[in-house]
Amino acid sequence: MLSSCLIAKEVLGLGLGLLWRMHVVLGVPSLATWQAIALTASDRFPFNAGTGFFVSATGDFVSAAHVIGDCPLPAVVTPEGLTIGTDVVVANGGDVAVMRTTFHPRSFATFPTYTEQGWHPVAIARFVGCGGMPSFSLADAIAIDTMNRLPGILPVAAERPIMGGNSGSPVIDAQGNVIGLVVARGIEFTHYGLAVDAPAIVMLLRHADRDFTAMGRGLPGSYIGQATLAADYTFPVACLY
Image (cartoon, rainbow, N blue to C red; front, side, top):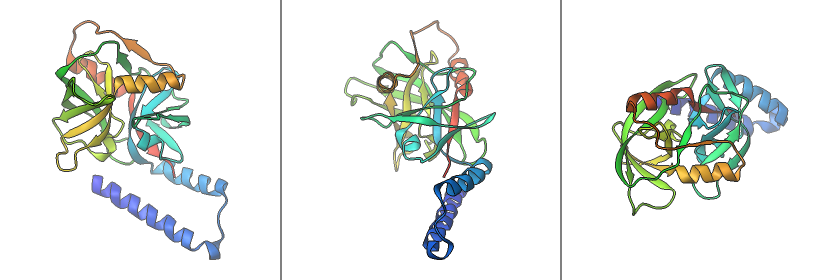
């Protein structure tokens, strides 16, 4: 699946590159023409640039900055179709970004009001694939939340390999709160990754004047049941070229 995604992107890049080199003969299309062509093609075959999650009922959506911020026209792939992202705000420090959409999710991510130190189990909610609606999955992991970790960075060790499209995936604790956002993985050790921690995400949301909900520890419950709720607010990000 991943190899086919890479091949598709290479073919698209080669095709656009060839068209650009022929601009003397063909003429340079207007921006409106390029957008019309790109939207038509991407609506049928959107490329999954990463993953993200909704943080409010009004459609505020968070992902990694290198997923949203580097895309000229980001969109969220929902069961009801593509919803275009606007008003993108990128954090000054930390690989995290937030954008507005017109989609109203059935549920949305919440953030913890408490902090813990030590190793504790979490789940990484993610999508695998690069076109259409990829498959949703949960990867069991351990958050390495120690006193010596760098501020804003939360190391994670996952049961299954972290893949390229997992950038922006939420890291969820046993109470169902988002405690991090996956931004990188190890080159040789793909089961290990780095996430932006919850305080850094909340700081960006406050700075950008976006809605979000902070929750306490809550009542003990099923760890799996809490984590699977993420399927209602976690979706792939498509980059519309």
